[in-house]
Amino acid sequence: MFYQAQMTRILSLMLFFGLFSGLSGCSTWLSSSFEDPDVRLVKVDVLRAKLLEQRFVLRFRIDNPNGVSLPVRGLNYVVHLNEVMLAEGESETWFTVPAHGHHEFDVPVRTNLWRHVRQVVKLLEQPDQPISYRLQGEVKTGLLFGRRVHMARNGVIIPGDFLPE
Image 1: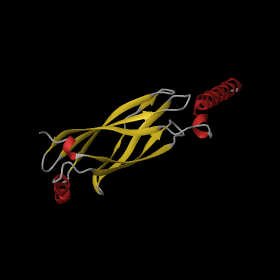
Image 2 (image 1 turned 45 degrees about the horizontal axis):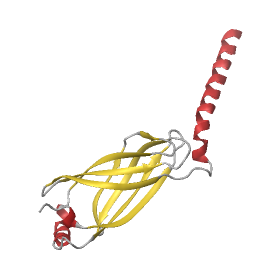
Image 3 (image 1 turned 90 degrees about the vertical axis):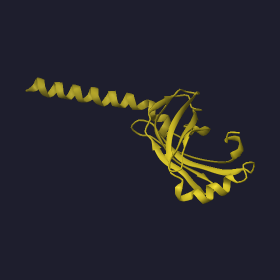
Image 4 (image 1 turned 30 degrees about the vertical axis):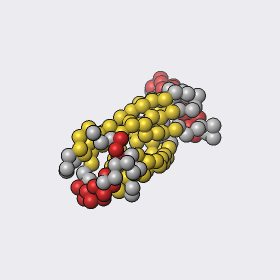
């Protein structure tokens, strides 16, 4: 009986110290020295554009300015074109961004612009005129005690650059 209690105590202490030492790497995420990673949309590929369904691939880049690797657990996003919601969704892809490094990843997007067809056609009537876009979202980082890094980007695209001649 004494042996079993002693063994349980030793295993409990080993488990406690194992968790404590494993979480010591997470301390930079909880401290003020952690810098938020920079998240950017770097490319949009149109895979298929039919009347009732459009498929895109959004390519994101995450730059990690920290001295420790950064585990990423996913991404939530919303994309607007001239205040018309193009897409919203979530990516549950897990990966690790190396310390002082970057990682690019693709997010497949499927949308239906049928309810916005008038607005989209009006935007495309002048293919040389810029169309504003807005990307908002958050990146889920960390393992046990993660942070949510908010992102917001605004810009313009010129539809003529994406239309075949």
